[in-house]
Length: 424
Length: 156
Image (cartoon, each protein chain N blue to C red):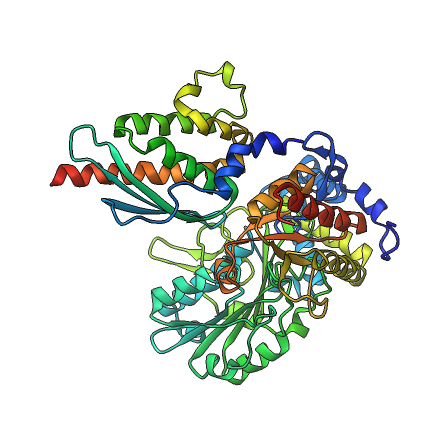
């Protein structure tokens, strides 16, 4: 069964020590919460450990041998991660997480108000609009709400259709000549929907707006080429793609990064400092104040290498199969409704659902009792759950280490929840 | 296997047939509490008597959420209804202690089972840190409402 889907899942699972542990009194762990955070293979853990045991020093400081090696490891990691998304190394800024990457751009835009003329194109104010969608994770919504609040700009959004897609019927009205930024999620963390990037980018270009893509749920799961996407900024997090916690990536067009004022300031990001004022380093250093997370960068590069060795197209195809199986299995249960597209077309491996008569928390509790670990709640996309008239959903997300048995365990566990609560 | 210890019959009964659910017109104070991690919400209305005892003579609620949060709120309304506020808040404090007991055998703790009555059924919840907030939602709303009701009485 494990090679049925093209990937040797048994072999892959062996790289993830945590997947061999048991939970809740000896149950096999069925980890279906990779959309929240993925598990880590030994290759990533070993790379991080090797950095600390062999090369640890503060990067971009000092001239001793360890500082050289640490800096080299950090910058090599940047090159590997850049190549993974088809970018150049100096287009990659390391952040604490994707949330910080979005905040970096949003705060740079408000800082542009008081920066020099080179930053003029980032300035927003009264009369300007910022456009998001109703399916955004709070991380790609709240920073824009706050930017609008700070600058007097207006926040607008694209709505959703009943079948879990973006409603583009009024795209030309929502994104208009006043629009300065269009920020949207590539793949929804709740619905699984993969948004039509090309259509959105084309409309943004027509009106001269900047484009930021939240790629947290797409970069880990499909082959990504930032130039093909055509956006201005793209963010993703390391921990959702087999990498360590504590590192995210902001990719930006080099000419934009060069013109953008800093967000966080301090050491490392300066050019010259006087008591009266300072000038700033070129990107990416301008946006990496303080001693950076070198070990995490090294770990994330190892994760990219791991994924590359398996092949992102194979990963995507594998998850596509699992998603189809999950949609089929869950849809067949009376009283279970999927929130999101019910086909696998333009859709990734996040499957959210509600079970009649059982609150998602209670569904999750029964699943957990059987070792099936899913996410329950609003998934940091409260407006989205509100849009679909549900207080919360149960969400399963798949990755390369899941197999058909995991999907079947999910479906069986949902049946068990219905039996326990007597709702089916 | 663990499920039965968490979802005791009393809890499921209160979930299916809640008590004091449906907001009543007689109240001094209304509070609305949410659990931001899951979106569960509860509105509690409380009226207390004007005498020194501040007896909880009216309590009602409405809410949206899991069986634990809703059943716990239902049990809470039964337990505090008709009690002088000091006694009601003592039960509230005991329930908080129960939720913080990390699944310990009640016999090994100082928890007063008699004081908790039906609420003791929630002991299994204390073993699941993610669910403790569900169980406390209505109780914390009551505590908040009670404090506001007292403040309002003392002002007038």
